Length: 185
Image 1 (tube, rainbow, N blue to C red):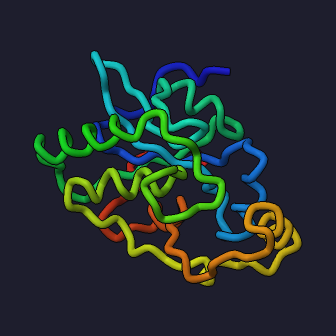
Image 2: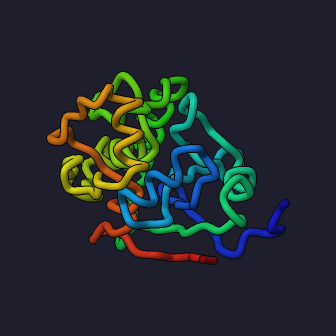
């Protein structure tokens, strides 16, 4: 279901968050203690907004389609507290385009072979010299729930490297260099 006209004029580089309906969303909610379980980055092409996102595979999705795919079409958009230069936007979009087609990283590993959503956004910004947040370690998250333990057993054969660097959608949302410009949560 479409929400109709978008409420704000978004800009290239804006970060968009939602509660995903994916099978891993409930696990991410528990581990990060946040409803923000998916994110992407907005860029305009031919005057129309699209979201670069890491799903299977990394792809570009029309903004309204991306919004409609989340729970209750709710979303939050953040923007850097200062204006992105045109060269930064070009660097970011160039990096984003080079990630297209990469497989989704179900193990949330900090590599460039595969990408998960918040890693993609973080690295797009890093390509232009911005650090949205400091990567954390798996051990910084709540891995004690039955849901998390089951995911660790399935994805890592029980051998999760708790020192692996990782960044969650919540970490990007809480970036001290960005601010919320829209939310319908």
